[in-house]
Length: 390
Picture (spheres, rainbow, N blue to C red):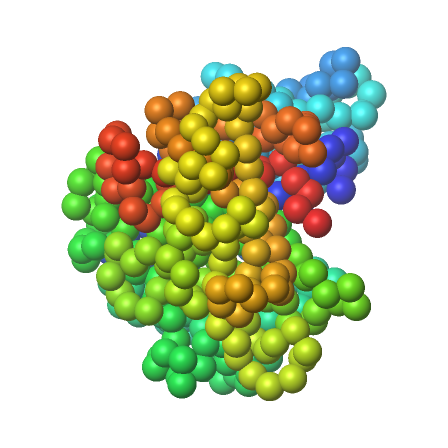
């Protein structure tokens, strides 16, 4: 890492200039994940890269996807310390800035792009893909995606795979849901763009997309799914603490995602915490209890707190159902056990953390059951876009 700050967490969204497009076309889900997880996107050649007083400034012509707190990948700089991942501190017309420990000077005309999250795509076919973390500390599980349909992607995890169609240790199994889980990507077939947000580190990605946006741009409530390694609670470790979140059908308004409060067991893990057996299905709940939607949950009253004006957050955990002990924590994402959040925050608003989250930025996401841009039905959750998650 050449950056002076941690760059392990990357975030991307559809409002970025040059971002990949998700729509009701076969293969669009895979194209998006390729761009965010393994390739990066929006490559530019800078007209200059200059360091002055600990700040590096990339100058270029035109526009770029970079936003404050996003991560770019710089290559071809004549100052070696400027190559690699860099976290953006400021943007402007034709410029991107980041902090550096490099000495003052000019670094030529390097290239830069949105940095990918660092995943592999070991196997692929026509509108088929397999993704895997490169982190040697990870569980090593695989995610297979069948994106041959225009409106729905089928998903399944595997412990091991030998090609794009062959794997062992599936989760979920056919006994759980025939053909694997569903990621409904668009309410209608066609090229209408779908709004989306993806946040990832090298072992887990959280992906939120508004499938009903194909019907109307005002439909911004989003299903939030994810895949990858969670934070094991077992003291001796848990080599199977990996989950794939999915829907049981192709309906875009399924409410069993990571942000919703449905108690369905729609998060599959390859094995239980003992390491024995096969796939287990888990629920995802906040530590404050599964009572209502994040941002509508009055467990700690209404926001802002009448006592101190504060905002309360709760981690979420995976467990084998109601009244079961936490198997693992969901990294990066926070439930809000307070009501009235829709009056203060909107989609992708960014706030600064305090207390245990001091120094971190948190990005707001909407759940599935808040389909419009206004109204009291809107809930809010937050995802840490600063990191590290582990």
